[in-house]
Every structure is written in structure tokens, then in C-alpha cells.
Length: 175
Image 1: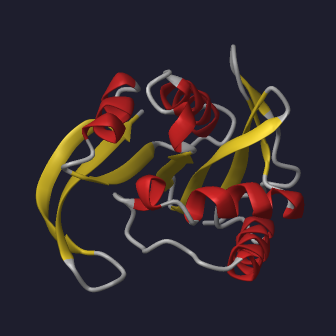
Image 2 (image 1 turned 90 degrees about the vertical axis):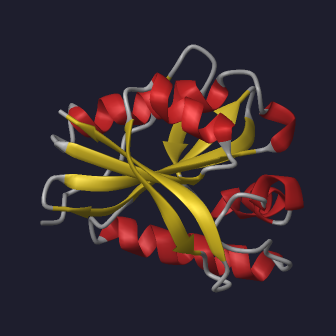
């Protein structure tokens, strides 16, 4: 099952606007995806060229148009500071992912953004199950999920895109 997502709404929190991802977001996203600190716990290495991120954004927007995913850019004070998404949308479930600029870590912004997306997913999108995976060393991301009602259902070693095995925790939230 794919969803009719167009037009994807902007979501608002006390401090953020989560607006549908746009082409103009590529440079801000590149700054994050090119940062070793931001990418330390991701399943891929840093991205070294803006053109790669521009293509990634185009691919994500095409997938969004097909109802496979939702991508929002996190905006604070008119500045793009991160990204959050629901991907692999199928059979009432989706996978949640989020990424935030390191200079905005530790302020509760990721928890705020995740809360808004969870409410949208379980409300207007009528999804019944959300999943997320984090590397177990990334306690901050795990706390964000736990604050928003996700429960750890498994821990195991998993291969990241480089083929390297990492200890990962798998979370689920069901309506």
C-alpha cells in the first residue's frame, strides 16, 4: 500500500517548522551529511560532494511523489538544521529516521520533531506501526525514540552500507 502524500503538509512545533523537503535544501543537508560528527552513527559514510546530495534529494522527492516516503526539512529561525523522514511506507507501517546539525544537539529539537512526525503518522496518515533503528552507542538517538513512546524490541549486530558490522537496537511504536 502506498499513500497519497501530495501535498505533504508542513508540521509545526514550539520551536520548529517541518516543511516538505525542497531542492533548495540540498546545500544545508550537504553540510550535515558531510560532517563526520553528524554521520558517526549513520549507516553510510560522509558525502563529499554537493552534487551527490542534490541527486539524493531528487530521488527522495520522486519516492515521495510515489507515496513511498515523507521527507521534511527541519527549520529553526528560517535556517535548515536537519531532516526527518518516514520511509518504506507499506501495509500501515513506516521506518522513521532523523538527522540534526551537531550545533543543535542536546536541545530537545530532535525529540520535538520526532513527536510531530509520530503524531502525523499515527493521526492523518493512519499508520499503525513505526520502526526505527539506531546504533547502540548512539544513546542520544535512543532517548529521542524512547521519549516518544518507542520500545526497543531487539538488539543485534547489523551491517551498515560499508559492510561493517555494528551493534544496533531496533525500536517499534504501535498504535
